Length: 283
Ligand SMILES: Nc1ncnc2c1ncn2[C@@H]1O[C@H](COP(=O)(O)OP(=O)(O)OP(=O)(O)O)[C@@H](O)[C@H]1O
Image 1 (spheres, protein in one colour):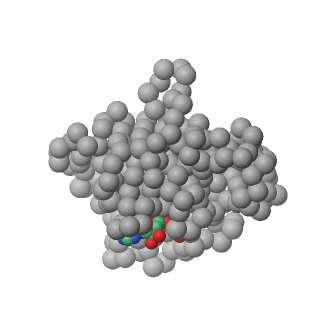
Image 2: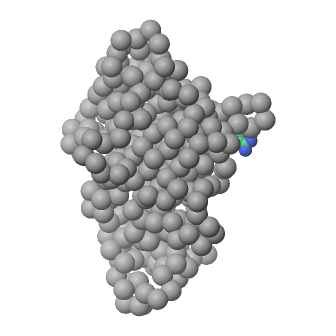
């Protein structure tokens, strides 16, 4: 189904006309391409023919009110849920065409930071970071592993916590270590599910700024699911908004904030904070 005809109707506001089907004009293949993704639970159609792409090095924020299908969408990307129809291509691989081994190989190139990503309580920070390396980088030397652990802890400003147990860390520090642990496998694509949930405003801002710092440092392409507008303001290169199972709107933060559509503008109640935050990150 043509989403452009299926979405917002009476508006002439170009910023909210979903244009996600238009692929980049520079000929560069997007890192993620989703076409016609549909997912129902029983009679309840949660996602209806979603199509979007993510360009290399881009942070795409997916907004939507509670229950709009954001988590179901991201779970479809990592095959925690199976779409009823539609195609998903990540890093040039069509997920449906991959065998078990190819799926596992691709998974290593994709980092997924869960909403409530927990650290292993009985392991120190170093051991938590070493864990994915032990699983997936069996041939990497101990020296290189230690260097990577230190690099990732340095990225998140927590080198001094290397020998601590998670129980000694604050909520924000746990998030940072969770991010470091995901990044240690050097993913080309990151999927963030509500990365700032449960954090106070200042810590949420710090985590959001860290996401941008990592995007720039490692040229990571990301999808960030959030309903935290401060996080969206800091991290988004582009935003799509889900409503009733479709891509209702697409645009930059500024375009959507100034939309003629009142429902879209209702997301942007914290604009003063965000303007400050956006200025700080140059988005
Ligand atoms: N496994 C499931 N079985 C049945 N219904 C489900 C399942 N998972 C999700 N849903 C339904 O799909 C809809 C979308 O859920 P989803 O968790 O994706 O929303 P969301 O946009 O992430 O919401 P929130 O911002 O509150 O996390 C909800 O109505 C939810 O009840």
